[in-house]
Image (cartoon, rainbow, N blue to C red; front, side, top):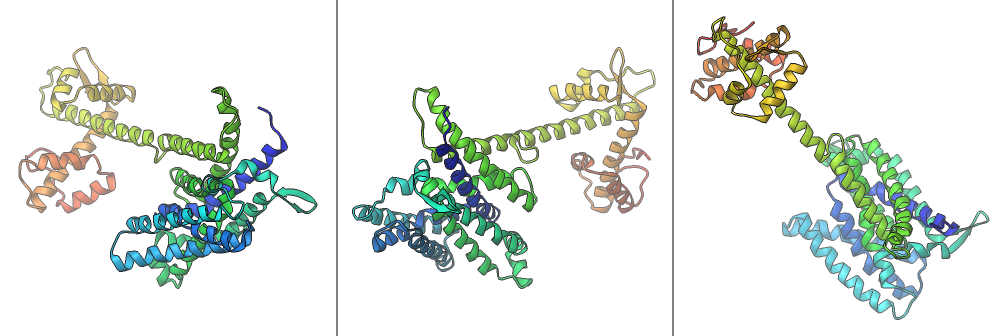
Length: 433
C-alpha cells in the first residue's frame, strides 16, 4: 500500500463528512425517523439540479440553498400527507421522496448537457477527486470539500451543544416538551434543516445514495452499545471516523488481494459501516444477539436449577429417612428435561448447593436454605391465589410455579401479608419459614 498526501486529504474529508452526518443522524435514529434521512437525501436532487440549471456552475452557495429548500419542502410534504390522507409516515415518505428523486434525476440529466455535472458523482460521490479541488485557507491549500464538511460539522456541534436539552426532550417525548414550553415543531424542522444541509455537504464525498449509511449506521450502532444520549453521540462520532479511515484503507488494499487496483472509497466506507454494525449487532453486551441468547440461556438454566432444588426439597419432606436419594434419571423424568437438568445439577454441585451420593443427590445446608425460600414462595402464591383470588383450580400449581421464580424477598414478605400470614398452603402442606 502506497500512502500519499492525497490519501491523507481523502481520509480527512471522509472523516469530516461522516462525523457531520453522524450527529443529526443519531437523533433521526432516536426519533425513529431513519427513513426521513433517506427521503431528504434523495428528494433534494431537484433543488440541486435547479441550482445547476439556473447558475450554470457548481458553486456551493446556490447548491446549498436549492437543496435546503427542497429538503424542507420534503419534510412539510411528508407531514401534510400524513395528516391529510391518514397514510402512515413510511408510505408518505415513499411517495414523496421517490417522486422528487425521479424528478431530480430527470433534471440532472437535463443539466448535464449544460454544466460540468456527472450524475454518477451526485449519486455515489467522488471523494477520491476532492483533493484536486482546493481552496487557500490560512496560507494552506485545503480541499474545498474538507472545508465545507468541517464547517457543517462545526455548525452541527454548536447546534447540538446549544439545544442539547431541547433535542433530548423532543426526541423522547414531544408532548412533554410542549408542556415545558419547548416548541417541538420548531426543533423538528431545525433538525430536518440540518439533515438537508449535511446531506448536501456530503454529496461530493459520498453522494446522495451512500450518505444514508453515514447518517444512520453510526447512530444505530451506538444505540446498541449505550442508552445514554451523551455517550451515544460521542460513540456515533467515533464510529463514523472509524468507518472513514477503515473504508479508505480497505478501498486501496482489499481489491489488491483479488487482482484489482482499488475501488470506491465511499462504497467501502458504507461497507465497513455495515460490517461494524453487524459485529455490534451480534456482540454488544446488552442488546447484541449473542448476549441476549446467552442471558436467556442463563435464565432458563437458573429456572431449571431452582426446579431441581425444589424437587429435592419436596422429596426430602415426604421420603422416609432411609429412602435412597433421587438420582439424575429420576430428576430428568420428574422435570421432563434432559440436558438442562444435567447442566443444572453440574452447576449446583459446583456451587455446593447439592452433594453427590452413590445413588443420587441431596441438598447441602446452603441449598436447603435456598430451596426452602423457593418452596415458601410457591406455597404462598398458591395460598394467595386460592384464598384471596378464589383461584383454586388444579392449574394454580402451574401459576405458582411460574411466579415463584420471579419472587424476591420483599415481594415474598408482601405476599405473606396479603395472603393472611398462612402457615400451610391449600394442600395442607407446611409453608417453610
